[in-house]
Each structure stands twice: as structure tokens, then as C-alpha cells.
Image (cartoon, rainbow, N blue to C red; front, side, top):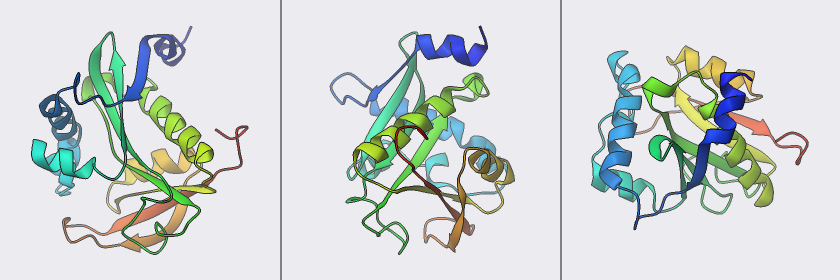
Length: 180
């Protein structure tokens, strides 16, 4: 069995539970996961945010966590079509989005990220979204390739006030259960 197939049986993906999960641990995961991007000179908010900012960024969406043998190793934020904001593309009634997507550097390239994206694609379909969107730094070519390989396409550029780079807005048309 491949590592990714083996992990599907060991990884648990569930909503963040404030009574059981540590916001500090989640923030640390985000910080270390985005460090590679910060080292490239890209100032993603997740690379430096504190626990209060993590909590604030979780308010309008659903935070999912990925646990491997009970240890937090991944996270992703899902925003339904009703809560996706920030650009004209996001604000369309048929567009959901995800962000704050992180996998512990020690557990990358094992299929965990694919499992998280698959889960938010399922949530988007359940919410009636026709498109699932994201944005990432224009200079993060490896991430753009990663998302492109999963069916996401370029839609637009956006410049966020909080970042020092132009973002590429990408989106995937969701065709229903057969595509997710």
C-alpha cells in the first residue's frame, strides 16, 4: 500500500474543537508551515500571526484539523459561499473558498494535503458551491503548480493590504460528487 493510501486509514480530519484543541498549537503549526514561504520573502499572515489572529481568522469559516496518531499535523480553513469575502470572485453566491492551509513540514508529500483539499471540496459541494477558490502568492510557483495539478485555474490577481506580494486567485469548477 502506498504511503498516501496507508495514511488515509491513519489520518483523522475533523472540525477544530476549542474545548479539546489548542489554539497555540494550531498557530505554531501555521507559523512553521509557512516559514518556507517567509524564507522566500513572502509575508503570508500565517507565517507570523499570533493565537489571537488565528482565532480571529477562524470566525467566519470552518477550521478543519488533520490528526495523525492523535497529533495535529495539518489544518485548512473552509469558507462557504455565504461567508467567502474579499474579492468580487469570492463574493459570488456560487463560490466557496479555502485558506490557511498548512501541513507540518515533517509530514509533507504524504497525501495529507490532498485529503484536506478533498474534504473542503466535499463541503463546498454540500453547500451548493459551483466553484471552490483560493489565493496564493504569485511568487509561490510550487504552490501554483500544486493547485493547478488538482484542477485549479487562474482567475485573477489580488493585492491584499496585509501581504507584500500580489496574489494569484485560483478556482476549480466543482462538478458534483464524481469530481470530489
